[in-house]
Length: 410
Ligand code: GLV
Ligand code: MN
Ligand code: MN
Image (tube, rainbow, N blue to C red; front, top):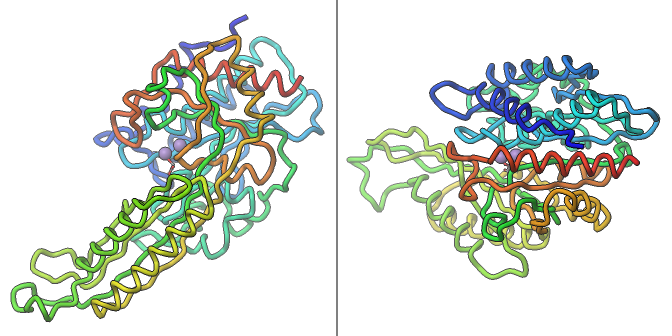
């Protein structure tokens, strides 16, 4: 019997995707009015099918379908509804709405399962304006510290204030912390965000592990001065120093390691940012990702040492701050097998692959077993306006996820 409604799934994905900043599709940044609007829409969808809806202290939105054995820990199906700038047509919402479709399929067909199912829209999975990602799932694992809640955006507003704006209660954040063993299984469907499935002509990817991410903030303090009157040899230019540091990251990450690693600077603020002023201060965000903790450490240590050398050579003050770290995870054989078997009645075009993107699953692995499946995305592109997934692939992926829920809860 075909329980998943392909047309309805596609419609809900398009409905939520279209809650975007109008002249900047597909943007719904965390802690904005659009984000709150999208989440109101989601809560109404959840209520319409009779789910218990909860907004917790971290402003995570959960819809709960109570199982026939309510004392069992829940199966959690989640992802996120916030987006990077321009690029969130499918990234995140596909996973949340696949979960919603699964619950719709179960309820309308009067299929009860033993476990309670929780559909979760985790708060701010993408790096927020406060420098932190996976904010909501961190709160569940106790990895959202007071120090992190005090991180500020460029307007000086704190993450704590932002969570309050999103409906949370950060003063009592500890109340939403869950313990190891408190979930039976965490499942997430996501677009691959890369080209591997397409290249290997696969329809479903069973994720074998997820990279860890180390993020730093680097603040380079030079001396602002008149760009016309300050001779080249008398400058303390923070931007040229920062440029050398960014190239150093590229060089270090380009070396050979026992596992692949990537290093990126995706945010840079130059002060005062005027064409006739020698830059006096630069702040930039660094991230390093690998499936190996050791490789992340090796690259991080070498990068920080080069930053120090460059600053000292240029007679410049530099501060480096450790913003966040998430550990890489490995998916267990048992869960990979569960997901692979769940594909068998649907497609044989199944491969295993690791994830270079971070996900809420990294945090959730601290609470219980996790599994992820990927579906293809057009040209392997994501985090950009062209991000696209086919209706049929979303449907197939959701069917696999439903099979996994039914098999697990048997
Ligand atoms: C999430 O999209 C990430 O990998 O940063
Ligand atoms: Mn993303
Ligand atoms: Mn995502």
